Structures are given as C-alpha cells and as structure tokens.
Length: 166
Image (cartoon, rainbow, N blue to C red; front, side, top):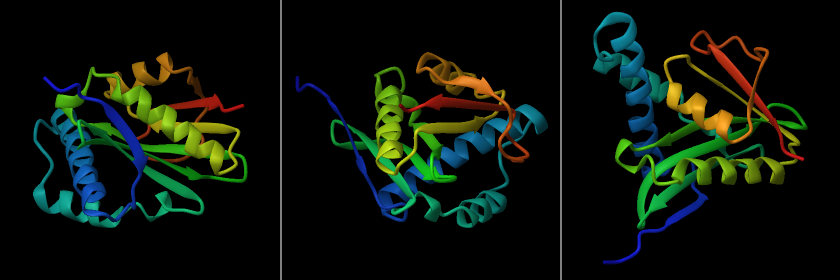
C-alpha cells in the first residue's frame, strides 16, 4: 500500500482547484451557521452570491498568498494570508475536507501560511473565527495562538486570535 503524504504549495486564488475548495469551505461554514441559528442549510442562491462576492483576490501576491494542501496528490484544503499592514498578516480560509481531518494537514497548512506571512514581511499574524467553529479554535490554541481583542468589525466574528511570527 502506498504511503500517503501531504504537500502544501502556493495556488492562484482563481484556479479551478482553489475555486472548488473555496466552495466547499464556504458551504460548510455557512451551512453550520444556518443550521445552528435557523435550523436550515444555506439558500442556494445566497450561497452562489456570497461565493461570487468573495473571490479571494486579496490572497494574491504581492500582498497575499493562497496555499493548497494535497494529500496523496489530491486537493484536500486551503489556507491563505494577506497583509493588513506592513507587519501584520491575517490568516484566512483555513479549511480541510472533512475526510482529511485528523491526519496532520491543518497544522501543516497553518505552518505554511505562517511562513508565507513571514515572507511577506509580517512579524505577527491574526485571525478571526466563530464560536461554533470549536475545532478551529482548538487548533489555533494548540498552535500557539492566543485570544486577543477584536481587530475588525466582521459581523460573524466572535473570537480573535494573534501569534507573533518572530
């Protein structure tokens, strides 16, 4: 039986692979929110509008980077970074397909995103997440992120984290 390995590499935010992963990510987090708060999945028209409204151009060089993780060569997840200012980067779109979770890919993705943030000149990385995304919050805490004051006005953000990159 072949050994399955992880790879993480930069990917254009508008590639077919990145678009498919963005759709999977957005569908999952949107459905989780609506199921929790309204007992239903995301309306398909709303889903299409929101995916189209957030193409991810901020995750492109020279001020950002999107990374794609592959497991055994198959696209499995993403993480992106974008500079908020000269020294602070924001971690975005951290996602692994459900079938790929628990195999070490999330920590690899976040580590690669931190390296990409350093390469962009950042010495600090921040992120926001929701309270119901308990797996994400546990991952960030395990990787050395500490909860901090809000740095944005995102209406869905309920927890903010930061980590020094030096």
